[in-house]
Image (cartoon, rainbow, N blue to C red; front, side, top):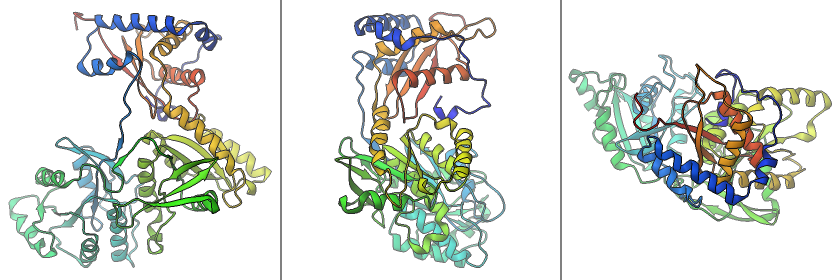
Length: 512
């Protein structure tokens, strides 16, 4: 369970009865006593059926050390092609679930454009370019433009053509762009449902991308062969991200919907204090990270949505911003989400926040254009925050003006708070002492005559903090949210998403 699950609809919240003084009680327990208690609970797990994964997880509890590996960004595969050739159907086929929206209407707009995928043990990110908006007059240019945006960020490209229709003028426009890109291209001839239609696919040799792959995205025919060859061409890591080493300047993503002030804020932060422009090679446009001096330290602001958008790509700005936001989050440790207070909080604002939470990055909310706020708008804004941002009430808030630089100095303490929480580890002894006191004061409700017990808890990782509870039964979602909330209150996890998951285990030899 993550904080993103803290929405109504999956069970009522657990409401504790009476007060407790858990923080004070924890202070009275010495570290030595806490470790002894935890060791006893840990030994008690020997009576339960544990698997190899459990054993690996529990192996680091001795001494509370776990290795933090370098962040490795998986390679990126872009699926491009004109409308209605079956791109979204192919996305669903590759990821193995119906997640991309599929309609027999060209130009269906979607919010989500990236998906995690895996084939033959290789992880990669799939980018679906189906999210463009139909424009009858400029359809050729629009398709090529969206393809160029996605190809910029991709390591390998899947170019989908309708084999029954053949190559159109729009397809030819995409071909010209792809030749300039000089990236591996897999030409997929879609809608080849049987052997009789394979001759249609053969005609696409003329496009100059080698042998076309005859595929039926709808039925799955031919997709396995194509994917086998595709993973063979994938680099180990994404060329535009690769391995992000630990250490060095902390990495910040400025994100938010278009025109909320990201460029203005970065320019104001960099100003005359800009240290250097650092070129990160690996994409056609060489995204640029800014090294900026703030609060006496250097910070790396990763290439962010919309800052360097080419003018001719302005039409695809929403799509482009979504791709760039995901790319920036992949490379960042903490996200500063800008929200313009002079406009009503939008669905797009909430979606971007959700992307940040799902990415597991630390989070700071920056309410921009605060100098434009009048009393009436302030009242409405407070109501919007209460209704739409309750699920991120744990994020530090900063009120700023990107245009004038007002309160920009308040960003550093907020960033420090969020990153400190994101990095935080709770010793196993302290964690189990906390869980013991919490359950003693507020036991899990009895369900069907049974009351699940928490046998042991451990922190599996940091960045973001992830906790695993070994239990004798499923904990109610409301009770798990209660545990998460009290973890925050007790240990000060301000500014980071938390994940609390369960492993339900049965006693050895028990009849099933």
